[in-house]
Image 1: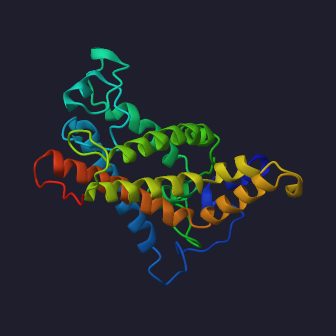
Image 2: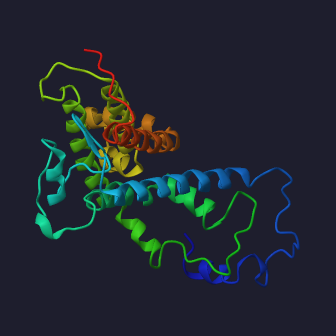
Length: 273
């Protein structure tokens, strides 16, 4: 992040006085734009889908499955789910889809995630779009001004994401029940939810903030063997943070889509036992 003298030198971008007088926008000959274009397309597709599902306010419960977009269901509208999880903490005054209450936290966690910052900075804001390709902006303020200064809330969104992951773990346990809430059953949706929660926990724990919280402030690992082992485990996950980010994003969308298809009557959930 540029500050002080460095920031003043960056005002005016690559065409500022004192910068190399290169007329071409870049000297790369490969298809460098494919990566940011693919990133933008993938994120945009998820934004469109999640927005549609969040405001649909329907087809988000098919016993025993509740969409991860709507859980925990805190609004009065959730009473229509016929035995589904319903906390009803907000009462009947909340007239918008209950998913809007919940998605703020996991989306806030992802928006402030270090990997996703790089992804949408390059894919949408071209800051910069690729290595050795200049960004088309006059100046550079980094994350020192609104709205990017809100990226500093990432650690707090991480705590909220832990709570949401805990609730989704509970929802996954409930998928071992049948439509009559009897335990000892398993369907295809159970496997979908198991895969989803495994990816969500892997992505959440691979967060850079998690790695720092677990062992980033330790001066002597030998005095904290448990935290050291936890730090190494999180570090191995952190090395796959990008892959886990995309896999968990796809997983949560597929879990919601599966519930939508069941709830809308497209097909019945195959039960194994």
